[in-house]
Amino acid sequence: MKPMIKQMFALTFVVLPYLSVHADDWPQWLGPKRDGVWRESGIVREFNADGPEITWRTKVAGGYSGPAIADGRVFLTDYVVSDGITSPNPDVRNDVQGSERVHCFDEQTAHELWRHTYPRSYKISFPTGPRATPTVDGDRVYVLGAEGDLLCLQTGHGDVVWSRNLRDDYKTETPIWGYTAHPLVVGDKLFCLAGGKGSAVVALNKMTGEEIWKSLTTPDIGYSPPTLIEAGGKSQLLIWHSKSLNSVDPSSGELFWSHQLEPDYGMSIAPPRKAGDLLFVGAIKNKSMALRLDANKPDAGVIWRGNKKVGIGPSHSPIAVDPNSPEFIYGVDRGGQLRCVRLSTGEQIWETYALVASKRFSNSGTGFITPNHDRYFIFGETAELIIAKLSPEGYQEISRSKPLLKTTHHAIGRAVVWSPPAFANGAMFVRNDEELIRVSLKR
Image 1 (tube, rainbow, N blue to C red):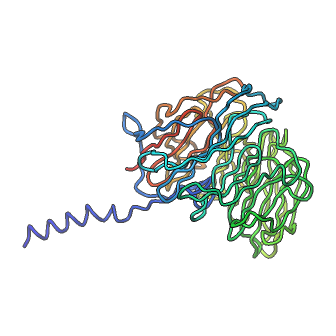
Image 2 (cartoon, rainbow, N blue to C red):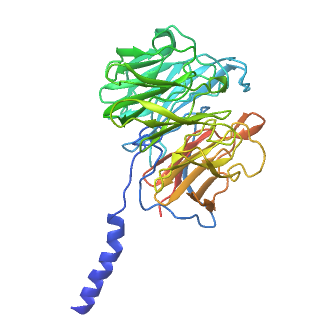
Image 3 (cartoon, helix red, strand yellow):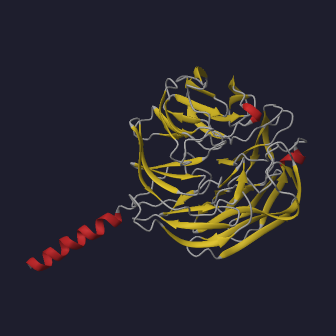
């Protein structure tokens, strides 16, 4: 019996770690809870000498949108140019003709299950392709094109359930850098930034596309996605447009509160980030602020505003909250500095140029910071994937891959990848303007 008992104990120790492994889909921008946290277990702690394995590559066309992963499928949008000049210039709206596409790939093999294509001319700056990541909700996927085409498709076959164009329906002009705010589904509603008089934000019936309510007026809707929080005993929908940060009632669009914050060039991009009763929002040229949320009612008061020595002024990248020390946040400032800031005061604790690999100003520096238990996975604009430990004590790099993709996008004097990665089922999915790849990160 003794050898058998030993064998049973050995089997127990082999099996139990695998029983505790947890995997998740990534069905929308910034993941299941839209907070940018990767909660899976069984993930690599560091890379071996060869770096992470790329398990497949598949060809795609241009775009900034990230992939969404749900139920064994990967959804991605792109743009195929047929005519026009696409050279990026932040001050010029390019006239380009082509087609936007929605792809559905098999998660394990990259086999294309279906594709939906529709013609779309662009008159925007940086006309590479769609900006918004698809949002998957059950058997439907919602996609938003760069010129305001909003589509609801069946996930199984790509059939169009309903569609509309936000620019045309609300009689407005496409933002200079395109429609960018990732659609948000909550309950029976789909929230989108539309534009136009009284319709900066709209709530649509997710099943039919019909308007439920519209709210707020601003000359430029900006690029920051609708963000839902719970505070003051209420659900609050945060809308940060080019003039102010606003909280509205998601059931009616009624304004709860508003505070002025006007980023340069109307570049409200990164979503507001909540940690406890504090809320941070920020953009380029040191336009940031922190607010304290009222515990008893939907209200908030400003506790500090940023400047060159206070806060973070991110360009494109979302802010990460430290899961172990929520008083601290991490983000990439406009110049490429990865910075740690004390949320309650705006104090800059430390900064490093490790993501851009040089101590130089990197205009619109970008890096996507994704916490996973006691590690952070950081995908930077150089297309390298970094595993690091971040804490108030400093930046500790553990591993760095070689560039996983070509830096196909040329902007502001350098070649970059500006598309957000998705982390799902033990892997990272990320794209450039030529291909989408799956990178295995299982331990």
